[in-house]
Every structure is written in C-alpha cells, then in structure tokens.
Length: 381
Ligand SMILES: C[S@@+](CC[C@H](N)C(=O)[O-])C[C@H]1O[C@@H](n2cnc3c(N)ncnc32)[C@H](O)[C@@H]1O
Image (tube, rainbow, N blue to C red; front, side, top):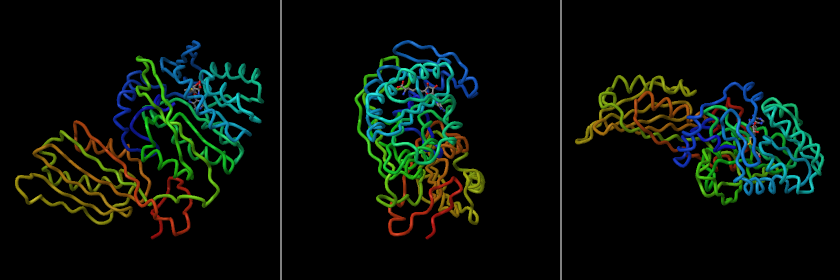
C-alpha cells in the first residue's frame, strides 16, 4: 500500500500533494523498520480485520471493496497473475474468483507468508507462494511471463511512504506479456499526479487509465483519510501504439519564511547556484549570473545558471522571506531530494513544489529513445 507509503517523493520525486501530509506524518511518527531482515522475521499481529507488523498498520478490511476492484482488473486477462504482498489475503481471495491459470504470490514477512502458504494449498486455482522481498524475488522471474500483476506492499522508509510502488514499475513492465495488465495500491485520491504518470511512462507504460473506488476508512485509520482511492488500470501496450516519453521535468519550488539576510546575500546566492547543479546530478555550464532587482519596493535578487540539462532560475523577495526557484531539466532527477536540499539551503519554514512534465510530444515524430536507466542524458535535438 502506498498511502501506507505516504511521503513526499518517488525515484525522483516532487513533494507529496497536501492530501498526503497527514498520513505521511502519522507513519513517520510510528517510525520505520529500515532493516529488511527485521521486517522479514517480525511476528505479525493478525485479526480477521487488521494486520499490523512492528506497530505499522499494514492492512485493514475497509479496503475489501478496493482490493476486489484491483483483483478484478489484475485478473481480467486470465492466465498467470503475479501478486506482490499477501497481507490479509483480501485481494488474493478476490483473484481466485476469476478463471486464471496460475496465481503467484510474493510475501516478505515469514509469518504472513505462512498464511499465504495455507491459502495457496486450499486455493481453487493453482497457486504458489514465494517468500522474500520482491526486490530479490522478481529478478529470478522471466520477462513477459505474466498476464496480470497486482502490487500492494508497504513502505519500509520515510522515502517510500506513498511511493513504494515507483521502483516496481520497470519490473512490472518487464514481467508482463504484451497486452498484460498492471494495477496497484495507488495512494492517489482522485487522479494520477504528474510524477506518478511520469514514472509509469518512464517504465515504458503508455496505456494508462484509472477509475475511482469509493471507500470508508475508519476514523482511526492512520494511512488513508479520503473517501475515494484510485484504481490504476495500466496495460502494457503493443510497441509504438500510443504516446512517446516526454522531453523532461520542471520542478517549481516556492519557499516561505527564509531569513531576510540570506535572501539579500549575493555571495550566498552565487555559491548556491554554483553547487546546486552538481548536487542534483546535473552539469553546470559557465557561471551563475546574479542581479539585484532594481525596482522599489521589491527588495531581492534574481539569479540564473545554465546547465547542460536546461537551466535553474531563482528570485528572492527578501522583505517577505520568499524564494521562488525553477529547475528545468531534460534529464530525470530526484525532485524530492532537490526540494529537501532547497529547503535546507534557504532555511525556509515551509515550502510547496510542483512538478511539470514538459514536452509530451517531443518524441512524437522521431524514434522513441530507450527507456531511462537512470543514466539518461538529454534527448537528441
Ligand atoms: C498492504 S499488505 C497487502 C494487502 C493485500 N493486498 C490484501 O488484500 O490483504 C502488504 C504486504 O506486503 C508485504 N511486503 C512489504 N514489503 C514487501 C516487499 N518488498 N516484497 C514483498 N512483500 C512485501 C508486507 O509484509 C505485507 O504483508
């Protein structure tokens, strides 16, 4: 689950939408089990309606209807279905209602895995339970071997909250047959966020659709506070049938409550623009330019630096403690890391960010470049 994974960032991520703030904070307060071995061996607290591991509310049965919708889509092609994360077995039971050939379940926690084994032994369709984290298990499974995938795990670190599904997207694409379908606990309230869609596209998915599921989480639910949750309906399309990858990303950062002295400090802004590109994995071109804004009553600075990937621009309004900064890049970058860095550099009290996907038709009339491996450079002009 992703909300169960609330937070503020995916493999390069913008800040989480405000709607995730509360659930993110509640998870952070519980603390994280960063040691995978600890998660794997922890005894699970189970009841018919809830599952918790190391005090984390991993699954609650108000999700039954949602799990049924995910299962219906994952099993819609029949054939071999991969399910990642067994939990209370709600989605597993729903998958079994469909005429599938095989159901493969991956579960990381040994105690929950025992339940998955009992389930597999009694399931009406051929079912196999595999013990381990998907990160270790799926690399052993062949390309194009599944007709449907349902992914619902749990975040084991603050960075994964609301974003634990992003690293799985490329693996889902690899494991699916052409025309196969993929769905997952989305952590989205009413639609795909831009970065969410971007990560799906970067993984190779082009046919991206969704429907909403109405839900009634209990008042005390720590990981979901909304009345709807998105059911992703993703298909691995036949090559070249639909959209091409976008040109790049633009991170828009607005920071409030920064110290006035900092925002008026030309040397500070110059140093910041000198080092920022390298710190976010980009390459500076030449030296920054800083100017004092020559217009009363505005007191502040403007700065600009070219980077090979595009540019970084910044404006400060020191009398209001406000800084507004754009990072425009044709290269995928960790927008969450950039946000955290900017918050710290400018010592802001609060910030907001947006990520815009730029140039969605850039590759439309040209051959599609290979899917990013993380070492991507700018697309050829
Ligand atoms: C939210 S529950 C799954 C709920 C399930 N869909 C249901 O309907 O009951 C998440 C499960 O994923 C497991 N898990 C967490 N991280 C995992 C990983 N990296 N690989 C495999 N399983 C994982 C947890 O131990 C937990 O049992």
